[in-house]
Length: 582
Image (cartoon, rainbow, N blue to C red; front, side):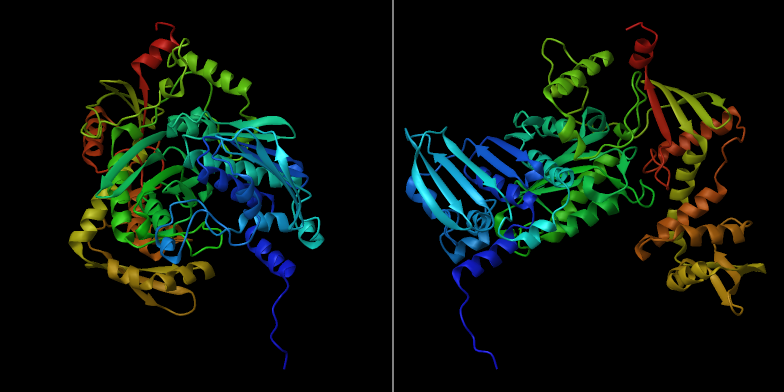
C-alpha cells in the first residue's frame, strides 16, 4: 500500500496552472479580470501568434507598489477577499489569488506596475514560477503584464493548442464579451501590432453593441429594461426577424460578469419559441444586477457558470419584460433603401475588421439614410431606438389596397406601406384560435366515421411512441394495427374535418427534435399551416380586410407560428428617400 506524501511546490503550481490556464484565451481572461478589479477604464490586449508567442495586457488601473508586485506571484495571495465570510458576497471578477502564479508557472512573465501617486514603478521578472529579478522601472501608471513562451515547460499542453487564427478568434470573442459587460471601459485588441478591435468606453451599452455586432444588426434589436426590488434587468434583444443558428450570440451578464446561466437561457428561449423556427436562436445582450448574496459564482472553476438563489423571481422578471417588448409593433421589419443587411455576422469577426477606417466608413454609410448628423456623428444618433412606446396598439389601422402575385396583401397605414404575407398572417390567426380552443376543449375527441390508416416509417413510429401521451391528452384516438401500421380513429373535437391524415403526418414531422413541452404549440402550428389560406390564392377586398382585422386582434400579429414575419413595412420617409424627394 502506497504511503501518503506531500507534493513539491513545483508540482502543486503545475496542477494549479492546469486548472486556471488551459490556453491563451485563459491567460487573457485572468489578466483582463485583474485589470477590471484594479479599476481600469482602459485596457489594451496585444497578441503575437494567437498568444502562443506573446500576450500583453496593459491597463491604467490602481497599480501596485514593489511589495505587492512581488506578493502577487505567491499562490493564494489576493487583495479581493480577507476571510471565508467574503465568499458569500463576491463583488470582484476574481479572488482566488491563482491567476498570476498559475500563468507564471508555465511561461516567462514580465510585470511592470506603478500606482498613480508614485513617481517610479516596479518591474518583476518570473520564469517557470520562480522570481528572477525585481528592480525599479519607469512606466505609466497602472499595470502591464507580458507573457512569453506560454507552455514552454509543458510541451504536451503546447501541442494541444490550435492554429494562431483559432486562438486569436477565441480571444477576440472574449474581448468582445468583456466590451459588452463593461461599456464604460475602453477595450483595444491588436494582432501582430495591428489594431483589430476598439470600443470607446462611453458607458452606453449600445455603443459597445454596435462595435461588436455592427450597426446593421443592432438596428434589428430592441432595448428593454425592468426592475423589481433590488433586481434590475436591461439590455437588447433581436426582433424575431433577426436570428442565428447557434446560441453563441446570447450574452448574459450578471453584476458586470459574463456568465452562463441555464435558467436565464431557457427563459429567453421559451419566450422566443412562438417566434422562431427550430434550430434558430435570438441575438441577446441581457445584463442583470442582483445582490451578490443571492448569487453563487463558485460552482465553476473559471467562475463562468453561476447559480441563482432567487431563480424564479429573476426569470419571472425577465419573462415579463421581454414579453412586453416582443408584443409591440416595433418588431415589424422595416424595409430600408440602400445596401442589403448582411446575412450572418460572427461575433469574432467584427473584432478583426473594425479598424478606425472601417468604423468611419460605417458612419458615412449611415448618412445615406439621413440618420446621422455629419457634424456630430455618434452611435446614439444612428437611427437606433433608445425608448419603446409600450402603450401603442399592436398594429396600426390598415386599409387593404391590392393583392400582389397573389401572395401578399398591400395595405396603407398611418406610417407608410405595409406588406402582409397572407398565408403567414392567416397561420397566426388560426394558431391562436386553435390554442384557445384547445384550452377550452380540454382533450375532447370527435370519433371519425371511417378510421384513417397510417403506414409510418421507423422514425415516425419512434416519435409517435415518444409523444403518445401528449397526443392522447390532446384528443387523438390511435390504435396499433400491427407492425408500423396505426389507425387514427379520433381527432381533437375542435379540429375542422378533412385532411386528417396529412395533418397528423405534418404534426409528427414537426415534432422532430422538439421538447415534449412544446407539443401544444407544434400541434396548433401544424393545424394552422394545413388550414390557412395558401400563397397564390386570390382574395377579394372583403376577405383581405377581414384577415387584417383578425390579425390585429391576435396576441402576436408579427410572426407566424413557424417564426416567419407576417408583415413588413416601408415608411413614407424611406419612399421619399428612394424617389429623392427627401
